[in-house]
Figure (cartoon, rainbow, N blue to C red):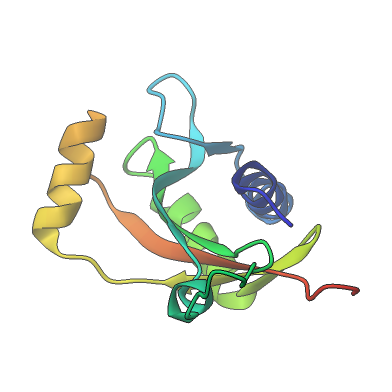
Length: 141
């Protein structure tokens, strides 16, 4: 079963091979130019959430989802944001050790976005919000 760390590192490595900039996980650092994948929320798989559990039911290890922002440093490096967006659209499925991740661009409200930037202490900038939905490989595969 892939972990959050494995999933993010697989994504970072795949992006790093295809964009003309260094790729980081986390909030942008002023002194480190590059493309940043900033995880902002984690949840469980919708498939697991939909299961009806009985006392004797033991589900297999669950999948999970991550919501992330893709940001550039410096904030006006629109070329690197464009390369990151192209990667998500051209490679919507990532094979991760023990599972599969689907990358899906998602919407957000301006108020929600502003509160994320404010809480993280990041100056508002062009960004892409996307989800990473991870499902483990079936047992025995």
